[in-house]
Length: 104
Image 1: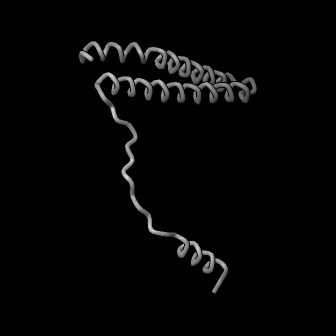
Image 2: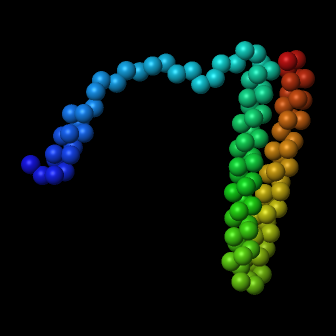
Image 3: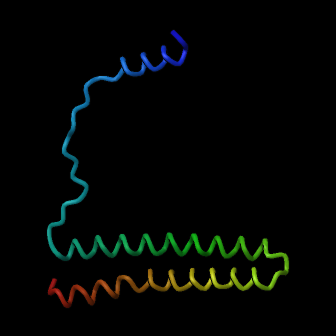
């Protein structure tokens, strides 16, 4: 028996019976709570993507080496990051408008 076969046999033999438990990730008590959760997710995703775009734009700008085309691409990425941060800042306003429309 090879070493790999021995390790595989030990790993398979060490695995016990797995029991599946019901996992509840979130329980919303009202429409207001659902909309608040959606707002939090949207703000997080937008801020994360904007941060990635800002990082990409900064790295492109540093590595441009004076190339006007690369500098323009870097500026476009930084502008996109600014738009993303702006949308993340406006997400609570959009959710409050949705709350007023739904009546929550």
